[in-house]
Length: 513
Image (tube, rainbow, N blue to C red; front, side):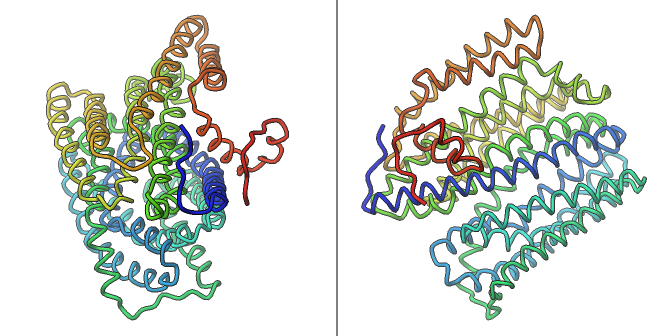
């Protein structure tokens, strides 16, 4: 499959691809550091807190995650799209976002407190309500920082956002660790979280102020109205997506108890770390350029990038799911406290959910760029309905925390199938996409056999051998097309140390800066 021709200068597209690769690499590096630090800290935190406290903590985090899309309201994604096309309006968008999202915070906070009240009564634990009210303050602090962050991404200034993200994450972990080790409990944990959020917001907003940018406070109703009308389907979509992810913890606390929630919360933390590292950063970094490609020429470069990104998501997520499916028990025994042994039964289900959600994120973002937010919303509603039905059957019927994870996996699978049925774009060919996916799945099956055979002797050797077979298969077998390797090469060359790698790996393509 050749790269689709476009009406623009090929050199311009090479430069755009190089810039997209650089954006990915910068955000990826920041994600590796910040998400890696927070991931390790979450594992440590689970050992420092009692299983009940960690269950309460996971429940409060889940409630906040469901409320957060009300504050964000999909406005950030719409603003990135519009500011990347019309950068001269950035001051107006900054003011409109601050005004609109501050008002939305009030609505979200009321809903958050009501949710905390209901869960605390159901679980007979008043601490849940008090901690939810305290943690909810961070929603306002975080959104102020996120507005400035989104505007920097629209300007493709990923280096600055990455540096602030790393610094603020390290500060947050340090402050929270100090509070927990000092015996301040969950109240101290959330107080330090708010403090680090203030620092992040000040730093990101300060970048714009230093550049001479100011919010243009003369209210532009057309911008506000555009953000709200285009954002509400995304907001509902995001709420439903968070309900997918968080309802298992909320319902488990309400029905079974906080201890079981601690198991699900820890498994979810591992799943989230993988998704943030391998999916979220790539999707966000390529979003501005994909938006422009959709508007240029016949849009074939847009479809081309969607196909490649979906394939890469499957390529990187499949071996992770295989490892946790075959070796969940020894991994949990080695790295988690003994009290979290039941997590081994939950992790494999979450990892297959990760595979499906990472691929689905590409198509969901593509539908957004095509301005099909309402279609994406209808798909999410269908998935949520399935999720609720399965939750009622599996959780209430069997009282097993694995049931809610199975429900989430099933709902996400339905959403992906529906998006695959609907998505169409020039430059995107389903026969090519599915054929590429089949080759990757066959390679994954061969790797799984190696994991099982060698893993029966030693699980760690099984992991290494299986991943090695997978990597060799990717390099030597026709798993990827030439243009797949070309795009991967550009990404690697844009990463730190890319010039050194280029001495040993060279492809005959133009790398334009």
